[in-house]
Length: 588
Image (cartoon, rainbow, N blue to C red; front, top):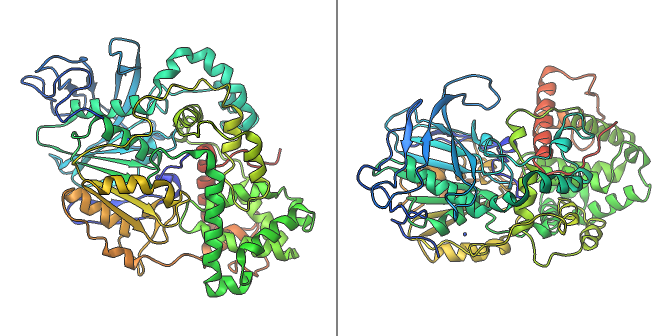
């Protein structure tokens, strides 16, 4: 799974721009021409324009004036800003019946949910549609991510997630099941026949292409005349956004592909993470304290420490449940974030030394992360079934590698995501949908396309270079944020202030046709190898991450430490729920 930039639950930072946003908080691809309605409608004709969307208002199909249309009706009703709140009217919500298959508009219908957060200043500058990643995330992850001044925000739940006819496996997701709401590897295999029995042939409609049609058709029915529309796709959302561009190349005024992973094949996920781990340790070798602790070849030190653990060389840490697999899961999670990456080198150092203080530090880390965590209402909108469905159907090598090859690689890797092997194990049985003509293609548009990625994204730039080159041939701009992880917004500037990614996005929202000034990339903070005292206290029980003898156990934690630990737990639980971590060790 491609984790959401939202790694919103995991990666958040702040920026300010004077005219467009007061703040942006982020924890984490032959299509139709401008005027074509894919349902045969013909665009906004006389009498067919969308009406103003207000509380309990209706946006009538904007395709009625020139050839008719599907008659879709978008009705907005007041709803809470946060999906975790039982009541509230700060936002507007709509659940529209859309075709299961847009090529069969008169066929079966499913729900398509969108939350709209109106700009405080009305009328709005435009619409900003936020397409979340995964695949499998809902729009709920963006609910507290943005505070817009002049854009109405539209947060769709990708079909098959959240409130958009979510694909579910109730037995595996029952709180009383072995891993609670989390779907473990064995349960995923058991879900296959249940999925087929429950959904049958309708599973063929849960595709990226149909999800892109959902977006284009709702934009057509909700935008005002001469209103700007920007579509932002994050992580897998960039694949979703690229597919939207393929089908609606002239509809939006600008498209942003953020933490982009367009049509990335996730079969080699473990290779990607291991390569990132080696890059990180190479950077450690160039940093004074890190290299002093781990020696001239930190990658070799890491390899030796893990091998020693597996061979019984550190029984005190092994007895807590730490294995190569457990380290993989923690480190792959840490690599999504700006600050948590700083924990990796001290963990390697303590694992290699394996003294009493190190065993105690690992015990605290274990205890912090294995405290029971119930998912929030919004987190329950994630769908592992939709995630696996899209991933195996069009984000997978064809033919795929055998499971044994994936498992063998994990057995020697220092860092691994550990998602590909369990997914491949159900590949043959999974009711995959047929790839359509859009899969593997790229949008062809004269509209501005902004691409952003973090320099330390787990996705190798070689995997997406063809996409960059393609859009640069048109009206595209590419910005790589130095030192940033998967979410480019996570990288703070030196000395504080707006993040560079936030500044770049602010320019694009102000005017998508303007030339982007990316000079802020020279002001990004260096890689975080120094662990803050707060994070060190929370994770290791001492402010000295390298050598401290832990005193702040789970039973002894001042309020500030308790707050930091709860933050760690919440973000770790969110990552686990959303499939970024599989089968984490938990005490029975």
